[in-house]
Image 1 (tube, rainbow, N blue to C red):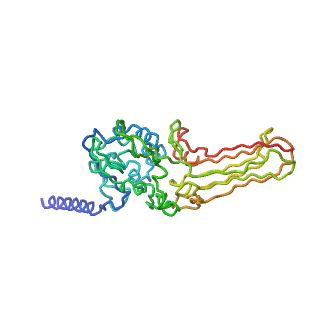
Image 2: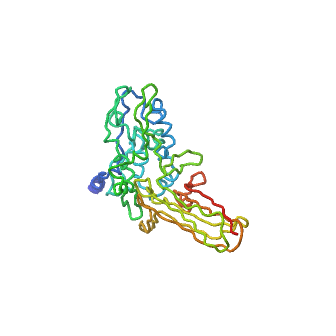
Image 3: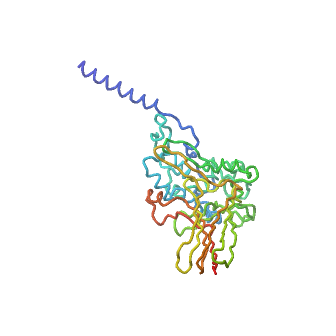
Length: 394
């Protein structure tokens, strides 16, 4: 009897100690990027806060949003590939599906402060269809039972709160300036906000000035025209899937020297391309550190197809991700910066030749795409400058 009581006492004490240990081990979430935006109720007068609900009235805004990369933030094949990795922590989803309404589980803390040991509970108000919308209208425009706008309206069928300060560039930077060393092998390095603050555009133009064109239109049929903004959030122009439209915004300007149409044998031939980060209020490329530009210039024999001379240059960051993530190279272009790429040669053989110049903008290289098992349906790049000049050597 005494032995049974002793064993039971030991068991109870062990359970109590284990429970106490677990409770003491939980560290609350501290950083903004560790947390989702708290659950948002549907404002009175509306049937829902999904983009498809908003699109019933705000038709042009909805059509624009559908071709934005924001609409693909959750379904993006690259992002989904990253989520499947064992090294992917829970917090990455907070920029891709920011509202708690969109998340299957609610994270309340971290055991031992370890991001790979989140304390989770089932979200009873999880909306799967809402999750698929990624960064949706409500991400920016719904808070505390009201629709937030920059101007306000007394004609809307729902509660409207005028708050231009909430909808300024600081909201964009919440995700577009996420920088943190999560683990030695995992860093979050999106520095567009810091790049903008260091640029000559700071205080003069902001994210909205360039990425959300201002126009005059009706917010909904019959409401009357007023100031509005485009909602396709023009960016790199590289679509998320083949066949899907994506609005590009070119911060880079290209200037080249048109070569002569005739050269003598052995006469110097020179071609120059000038790139200027003329329009972007941040570095180019910006955002994901795997983005880069390739500059290719080549002189080709038009009869044989033989490459006489070529030049290839790359603009972008270079990273080593293992065993410790670190940047080992960075030649991104600062706002206003210009660079020259020159190809010089001379040709002895008479004939017909051409200079081919192509600049491409890349989301990632083929090695990264293969590692993430991304098929051909996932576009890697687009062409942003393409010229061809023919000439004769006599």
